[in-house]
Length: 255
Image (cartoon, helix red, strand yellow):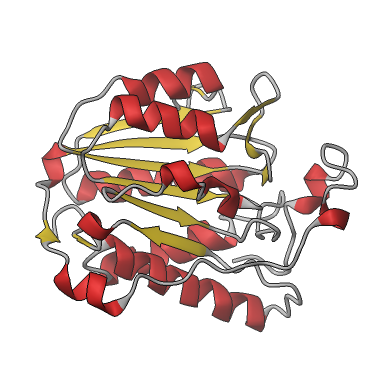
């Protein structure tokens, strides 16, 4: 486990110098209203009908590949068969370029989509070391539209400033968008000495105990809050969650 908090911001200072100075205070995404959750149907997709796209966008820290490798194994153990891995590290999967990832998402297939992305990030998007690119929220949204359409879709973005992916056009009834940090906040644990980022660590720890994706997101957020308090993080990451009305009770694969 990490011995000290290491913010992703340290990597990004050269890339986004001066950006944070103009940030406003974080505005947390409210939880879905109780009446929406209560009235939403329970949606259960067979595990072998899920399609998962897992992305480690950077290899400057082993934490990103570790998180994706472990999640791939956990999903396979839950019965998910259609798993595609993208990595910045040779031999760990397809190369994580924006073009490859977008093509992988657009390929379609399955009855439900899961996209899990972990890397560095800023308010413009998700960092991909291959080609020094940023995958923007709008580009991800368009790829999801083409590849997942109206099917139940879960998107997890585990980066600094990942709340930026909860853009208005992405807030669809069939989508759950889970972000590791508010738009103006950094996330932690992406240093060279970390086995996992703090968010990925908590997500994996809470995976077995949750029944729905909403429950998993809320349990992960609580875990991150506790971990940051224990480690003395002064400016918390404030993980964010958007839940579409049609998938408020979407079950995890095999649950």
